[in-house]
Length: 164
Ligand SMILES: C[S@@+](CC[C@H](N)C(=O)[O-])C[C@H]1O[C@@H](n2cnc3c(N)ncnc32)[C@H](O)[C@@H]1O
Image (tube, rainbow, N blue to C red; front, side):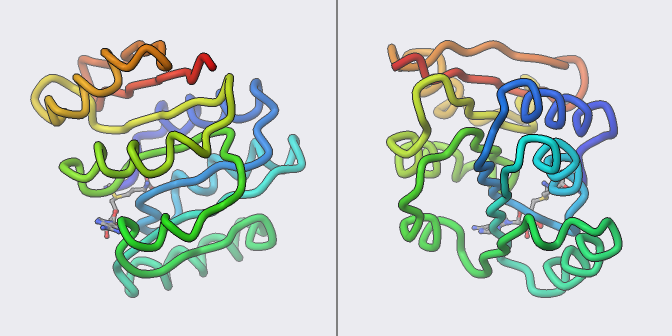
């Protein structure tokens, strides 16, 4: 379920090159993409808030964050992210969506106001066969967002910059 290595590198590069201080991830699983974010956040002095509903995967993620010695950079939030994200108040530099695909629109609606101007919304599994058309419409028609699609022949990644 984890992102492929190439996508992990993309996440690290966006995080490091934008100097992101706060990354929010929906869908921790066992922490693989989270560790890619942390490799960049070690350099930017930032931190990761990551949401997971499954206790078994979350406990493996905790172990993996410790093994990678990045646990101090990570806040894990358990439960249904659709509810738990409403508690977030701080600005977001990068929002990474990688949980329930049909929930992406809801996450976007709730969290876009917290994404800072110039910040990114990165969505995974955006190939033509996997993407939720409602989410594609949301990120390609919102005048606040400029969107491009990467790696469309494989997993598909949507990258949307919040322009203002
Ligand atoms: C594709 S995996 C995430 C992979 C991870 N980002 C990586 O690349 O290492 C999706 C995860 O989202 C979690 N998930 C699904 N629906 C969720 C929800 N409503 N709230 C929180 N987590 C959810 C699943 O339990 C699963 O672990």
